Length: 547
Picture 1 (tube, rainbow, N blue to C red):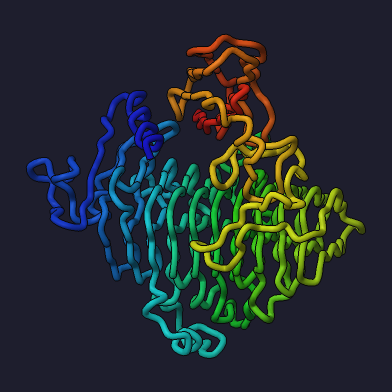
Picture 2: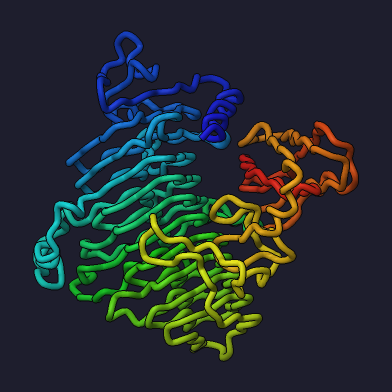
């Protein structure tokens, strides 16, 4: 939490002209007025989130939402109307030190991000939504009513009914309006009848560290836990990831109402944990990273990469997905796709395929573990055999697997065949739990790294401290670190593809405090990781560079 607050404060330092402001919202005792400094302190706050959002119009503004329950029956609870800028996003987040706020909604959206009202025809950009709990309307819906909703397979007349369509966080572009540079992190999204969270016709989307469960149950238009649909090119960079879906947990998302579209009943074909869909159809050139996600007990696939190109699916754990009886897919589905790598994943099926690849080209499976179900189907209807190298077919030996996102444990037992069986490239710096990704000689498979080797290495020595300042940055970055003893030190900066872009230190250094400077080359905006390796182990920090 401190890092998020530091990020917001640092962003203010580089602003000129309009002054960024911190706004505060309280569900108890707040007032919607600007008189007497209302809304400008934690103890003299606004009453509603939207009232604060309508005033957060300057890059660098932060809306702090205090603990409590916020309820709306309107179209959305938070409608984001204004844009931040590179290095100074507008942030909507929980208040540090409080319990996370609960946002309950029964309309179409919990949080809606679309057109910038101050720049008609342009999408909202440079926004962060952090640390919120969003609860949809499932608890007020009966399945019998949802099956007979208007514009459905059973009742094809009329139009959409908002009660059945609500999704937690929606970034919604159109043919002409395209949001970009949106980050959604550390949110809990649950019981939303339409879907969990996602983006359409947008670019530079980051979805990370979210818990999404029990969504998409009652919509008639298809939905999933996390969806990215039909990307749009903000630029044509291919050296970084422009769509990132990382470190999320997705459970119990499924269709209980068949999908109805264009007068045709399409059945129960959605309800995925994570889906990247139709990027190819819109000519999207960006590369997508799907990494370190834990996805289980969903009606559709755990991860679907469909009608899309340029994706890396790395170190995910998929467990007992495709529970919808009529869905013929697998825990991992790659279809009508090209230039896709699936590597270091674990897929454990209940009754169906662990992985299904079809109508695809230039797809590689490498160093994955498959177990259960009906095995692997690699029907490449385009070009023949699909490489499936270094596969492990064995029980991964999870500590305590299950379908409860709160009570299950998908870390690896000591004897797991997934330990040290991965490929050491395109790795995130840390695993789903925040531990360094490589604890042994090679990375483990799946979302969690078993840290036995690291624990033994660090038992007698405190890991080195690492500080990255400023972060995010639009210029030079200072890297400060402290080592406890004399020994070999390696300090490097990795890009979004896991490649070393700068090796700053590689040799023996004395104990104590050290400092290095890093200046990124031109046009190097994106998410990087600073990785420090010492005899005590590895520590890393994410670094965001803006143009």
